[in-house]
Amino acid sequence: MKDYLISLFIDNELNLDEKIDFVKTTHSDDTFKDEAIDLLEQEKLLHAGMVHRVPQVQALVEKESWKDLLLAWMRPAGLFGAGLALGAVLLLVRPSVDPIPVLSPGANAQTPYRFIIYRPDASQAKIIGTFTGWQPVAMKKIGATGYWSLTLDLGEGEYQYSYLVEGGQQITDPTVAERVQDDFGGENSVITIKV
Image (tube, rainbow, N blue to C red; front, side):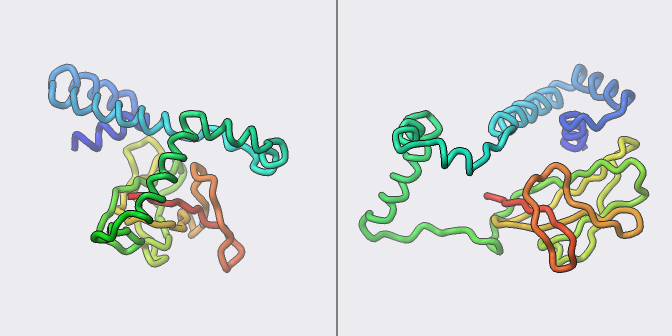
């Protein structure tokens, strides 16, 4: 229950009474307070790595010369990429040892992924996707906030999905930019999970 309450706090999904209860609990329970702070620190790290603006690839390709690309490799993010590339090369040319296992979309390693949608006017919300075999799975209403949520354990891979709301209306996830056309003239959101 504590993790659920902290998650609602982080996602700003608590009403005012629930926020008051949350603050009272953090002041009276040191373990709860420490757990909340740890999760907020994790959330801060997650948001620090988020891309807030996607550059137009075509414009970059036309404007950058080989010198610009070389300088980009010298930046910290570029050095990280160069380090990964060097590591991959070293793995390929190293003496034969036991192979490193590679996880694929059906492997045992899974990570929880939280799906959330704001539909205050809906009396129900469901999710369908490749991870449900395109069978609708009910989402849970989060108090009186208007949000619907569902956390699923997903393995590494790419997944397509949509939300179903009132009357079977299918909508894409407004928080996910990547979309793909389905075979029925609609759209699905696309996420990639890395474990």
